[in-house]
Length: 104
Image (tube, rainbow, N blue to C red; front, side, top):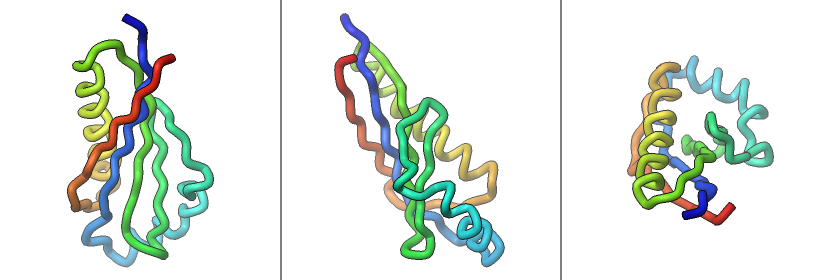
């Protein structure tokens, strides 16, 4: 069985942002612009809270079996939640995960 490259996208919405948290996100918005988006093992965050309070994390992983895809998805969701919670950002929505894979 050959290894597949897995690209996992985690999407959601910031929720209950205080004025200070919103200002902080706006101050770092250039670092998280969609034009800088990339799939990385540690996750790449993009958002534009000036337009709407949505965010997207992009994670890069790999695996061989169907279970690997499920585990990569779980890791990505947990990493995104941890990043948000460690920084005190509330979030809501379906927190949907889109799994994309290719041979590689």
